[in-house]
Length: 262
Image 1 (tube, rainbow, N blue to C red):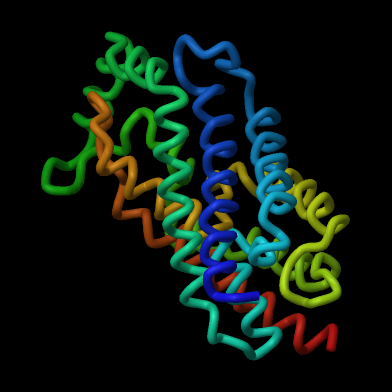
Image 2 (cartoon, rainbow, N blue to C red):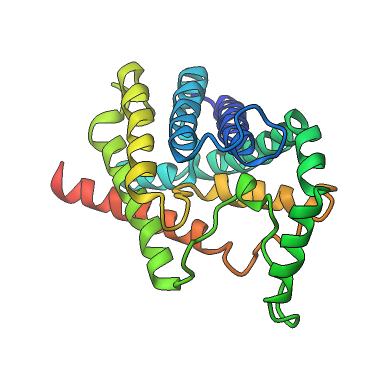
């Protein structure tokens, strides 16, 4: 596959992944959404189906990595790093495009939610608990765009993201690669979709299971840039964990695969 196919495929695929993934979270969280309060099951299955849709849409173009940790794991497995920057560029651009599209789709709900007196008051109370010498408190809709921990413990949060990503990438390497070895096949896409649901249900509670650096960093940048009223901070102090943790997990998966499966 050519570099242009890889870039286009990863951009489109990651944009669809984030549009549908952030979209289900927005539907559950935002006021005046028909799916408000649908719960964690809706979110985990929504993300799983988002993965499945993006994989089937773009697998023939780029192999549908859609995740820098997957790209790193496959590169370690194969020893081929030449196209890694192209994959990463497409994934980051796609993640940002998907986040913007989710905002457009829920524009009215964002406005209603962030101008609601109860939400504004809660945000002000949260900001009062944060040392003013540090960054502003994480905003009331940041969780639609990116992840955050329920308990802030650096080593645990980092380990949780690394473990979840290790499971994801090792599974992809072990049984999800198609005959070309470059991406997910037809059955692999379905299996990995359910794997993402499983990771969300089993390991998503502590940190929100980013398990994908582009999925977290790209939308977090969009959150920081969008003209959202009363949006609060983007929690940049935490932002490195859902980037570094998944990359560690992906690299470990590639190494374990080479040691145990080859």
